[in-house]
Length: 195
Image (cartoon, helix red, strand yellow):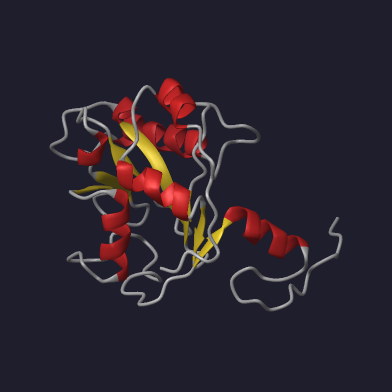
């Protein structure tokens, strides 16, 4: 996945550790310094790392804190993955899909590089699935059809040979200039006011 539309997120990892009470996986740290947070083909959002456990504004959708709260709520209401002896505080979100799937880590190991990816798949059954790999390996397997079945409700990235990453700031800049960030086409609704 080319990183030309990525940007170093400039994360204060010490503040992140203080807020969340954990270190972060080295592949995630490297991903943030190469790509940053943003979208992959407008299908999967990699969340902005936050040095606050509370969403900065609104209901928290699309933020690490908000999606972590959502994952923990689903764990509390539905129960967690079968066979996992841990509570809702053991999940930490790093992504969300256009199908409303939530992706995160199961943080039960003291070594963050051993955290498996946990997915709450909205349209799957069972909803919770655990994948014994890190975040970047999960993405690689998703793009290469390296799982027995697609781990997400939306299969748009399943076997995608050339996924495109777009940093959230560049996505925002393109929207604000009247261009669809992923197609490059003019936004037909740009500048219109709706009541």
